Image (tube, rainbow, N blue to C red; front, side, top):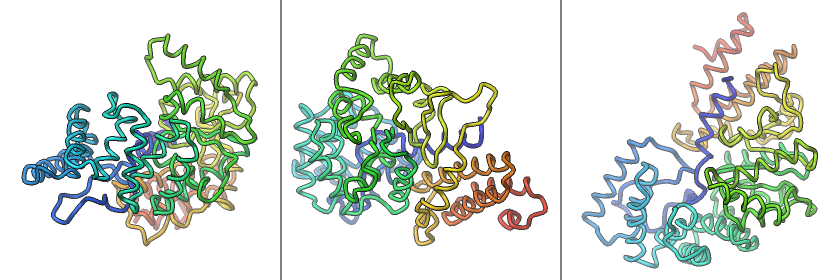
Length: 432
């Protein structure tokens, strides 16, 4: 396993998570002083199981003394979700919260979220889930959580106008931190015109879509969420957003794939069958448009691509021809990747000293992807005899990782540089 693969495996968790619920950094509206700490979405931070269990204990104690607090029940349900507790226990808490206060925005959003996150939804159907989520947004107009809850439900129902309205609202409410938004910008800029880009979590899906909706940026790129691709309505409707109306699938083809998947016993997500169908189209030449996966997509999802992926900036491009059998490392379009970093990418926020970078924050983890790509660019540059490019890649990666206090990554990059140029003083100063 190469350096690149190891780090992609390590950071993919920050994005390969169930889509809802997401959380802007506006505090949940029903929280009041004296309550335990808010359980933030995994889009914001990822704590240890032990920490979530400890927080769950604090919320249990709070509920014992405040049994009619609806938001406390929702917070406990979220803590238990991240601690890996059974779905039934969490569902009972959400139902209790809604029964206690049907006007509690957090309870409404939590009820709506079960339409996508629970095997057995607490609402009758997606229409009811959408109504609840929109009600939450109305009751808490400054809280972007509810708007982000509306988006996947409305999208799954084939209502792009409603989905877009709430996505723009979340953007305007500051739902996305600058480093996450810039990462999304850089993802979109990595794609060739008319591309399909597969994503599968909060931080590689919401921000690029928000930039497209609120800033009209790279609307030629079709962002397809792998989690939602398992919903029949989304799987059929999403391709309608392809540039120029030219999409790799028709609704009829999606329906054929879904029926075959259902007949096969549902041993794996239907989205896998759809992706494999597109891989075949690329490999046999029946689809020639650019197809990418965000580098944050978990490696197991990429297995169906075989050896046909090539790194271009912050994306993995699906190529028609696999890499040579004797090639050991991942492929990279080195010239394009370096050009993007030098001339196109927005990198200032990734090294912003004004941001409180914490190892448990999703932003901290996502930024590590830059270092992984730059490390590989350095390796490829060395192999090509381009030491100036290697120095640029390593220097840029070290500077970014140092700004966010990622000492482990700084040492890895500096150590590699020192091995390349033992007599150079520049890497040495990072190893002191």
